[in-house]
Amino acid sequence: MNMIEIIDKKRMGKELTEAEIGYFVEQYTKDQIPDYQAAALIMAICINGMNEKEILALTMAMANSGEKLDLTGIAENIVDKHSTGGIGDKVTLIVSPIIASLGVPVAKMSGRGLGITGGTVDKLQSIPAYRTDISIEEFKENVKKIGISLISQTMDLAPADKKIYALRDSIAAVESIPLIASSIMSKKMAAGAKKIVIDVTYGSGAFMKDKTQAKRLANLMKNIWQGENREMSCVISKMEQPLGYSVGNTLELIEAVEALHGKMADDVKEIVFAICVQSLKLAGRKESAQELENQIWETIHQGRAFEKFAELARNQGADSSYLYDLNKLEKAPIIIPVILGENGYVKELNAEKVGKISMDLGAGRKNKEDEIDRRVGLILTKKEGDKVEEGEILAFIHANSSEMIHEHVENLQKAYTIVNEIVEKESVIDEIL
Image 1 (cartoon, rainbow, N blue to C red):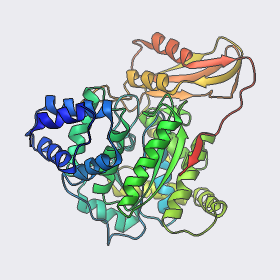
Image 2: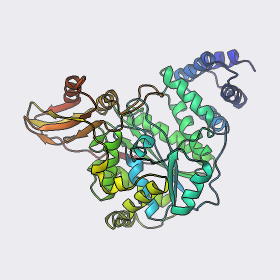
Image 3: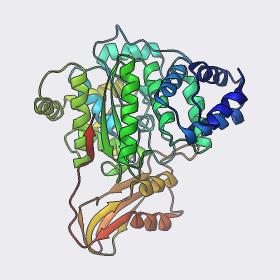
């Protein structure tokens, strides 16, 4: 096949064949196609799109580009969970031990943060000595032994996706529904999941900027997944403001532990309970949603969910004493309050602006190779619908130096929109598909 002809075909908006897509994925993974040609094809896809037949072909080609994990025989009714990302999204750290403590095995591979969105792996590594990079054999054994394992994505699973995603990021082609769908689905298929709950986020702090895009992505992923005789539930949620009250790796770990003790922000609780209920249903639980919610509260209040998280940490080499005494976790050397200069109600807290501040503080990566500072980030004391008075603290900035602190304070103040009239707090979940 001729790569130039494939590029030209998609540039003209024509449908690529399964063979042409398979050729591109295989040869690019083997370094037989240069980045500049791959970039040209990816940009043509980004501009002209793909139909469902093409997206399925791309998904399967990437899923088959490396090792595929077989989870059969480890445990029954394993349910995976994925989020398309957002600011302050620490949901995996809360949901996973909850459902594991209720008897549903969790075998999950997660990623690191890039740009303004955080990564579950970085948050897990805020627990001293937690090992995310373990062998597939140990991963499987952990699930058999304690019913849960959370690790980083292995290099051998869907290597084509890893290469293509890095290229997409470098040419501003991340926000493409066909490419997002094939990226997520290829990794999940390679990771062996048969049942999955996906939180599809939209808003200022997400890849999808409006509900229409989010719903289109969700339906597309469901069609791909169910076409392979697998089960999926999609939660459509808003990411207009950060989720919860913390943004930053150690700070989000602390919030997750507090949530496992029953202290949850309203928006976090709404997402956590929805995903837990959907996970339990996919695992075969026949109880009503209310009965399942009661079971979730029970496992939290009886301490079983937190103990499962501590057991997970110990089993993967971490010092779980840090989870029992959160004050032991290393804190940022500089903590600055952000003060409000007016009275009113919070109408908006722009998630994208908050995410950029957190990234600039060092909590996120501008490039994949960047080192992050897990101590830094923000604690938000006021969010949408909250009443505020002049001189009140809106948030705390946790920083590693005083450099640019004044600019960060100003930018965070600008992330808030304050109005005189009362603002009603809105649900963060729009729909469950």
